[in-house]
Image (cartoon, rainbow, N blue to C red; front, side, top):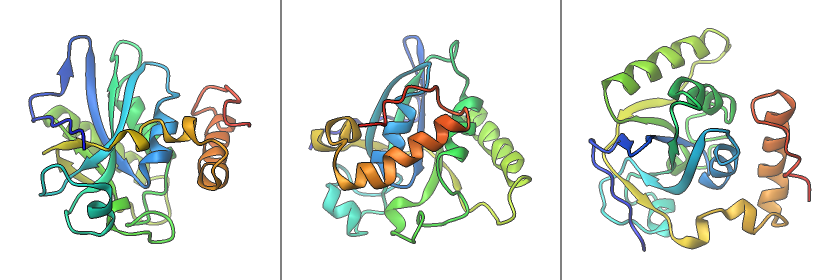
Length: 192
């Protein structure tokens, strides 16, 4: 397995900033965030656990403490961290602990902050979002420890497998809904 390990000091690269988010299956989250203007790259992987270089099966088996997450590299001149958090809240149901249908702890909702500024923005964003919801937000806000890149099969999954049942039943409707609400730009790329 290829691993990208990022330490706490890696919040910024040359002309970009990094966010690490978990909001259900990473195939959906990657497809959503890769369409956001100002996002440079999105990697699917695992974060928040205690085992180095976990495999997909180990994470799904609940043996590592990791959850499926995405590493979002973005240009802060084109899109702010706050705006990414707004998209994060809109892209999944933060009132479900283990994702919709209680899929398991590897699908939990977490914002992994890299520094005190990201922590503060995440907490403020959660508070603002909570004021609009009837049920309590269960999203965790935790310090970033590590990120391990999932293998190539999981990178760009939606783009490579658009006709797969998961992509047609779960991802495409999410993209369509986010576009229709003006959260993502209208690309019609979800229609196949």
